[in-house]
Length: 114
Length: 114
Image (cartoon, rainbow over the protein chains, first blue to last red):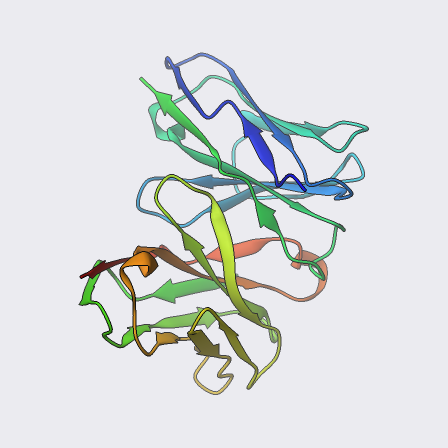
């Protein structure tokens, strides 16, 4: 079975631009979470979606937004990019919206803002 | 809020040496505890977990015991291999309303030399 997939693998954007990152969860998983991993740091929680509704949000500005589609895939959008948004963005899927199940991580999207 | 503190890296060992990576946490109640591993260019993989006090998680020769009295979850392996070279993250997941998200430490880079 395919694991969590993310696209694109890498991208480079300029300050002030907007970016959309995509995630496809493991088949049958209904929850998707997004994490930001700045170089040299541990991942930081951004959002969790379950059944197309936002279930939780981390301490990130409103420039960050996300949504989940009927097929449970998800997009993370970041507007007005700053240099500090350069990071590895990880998506994780889980069967449910609670912490009872393990989260499975994708390989990430490496975003570089210049 | 919840937090995880793990020992600063990098850690460099020779093959077959003993490994310890310290991890302590701060959390309300009794969280679930995890060790994740990140190989170069890849996403996070769950290495082991423990969900209650005195539980011992183990996988691939790695072990960690949930110590409530010292709020610790130290990772150990008796004989490391070159293939264990990676970044190791300690993480927790709270109980109750916020139990959907993981809180990570900063990570410890392990390099094992032949």
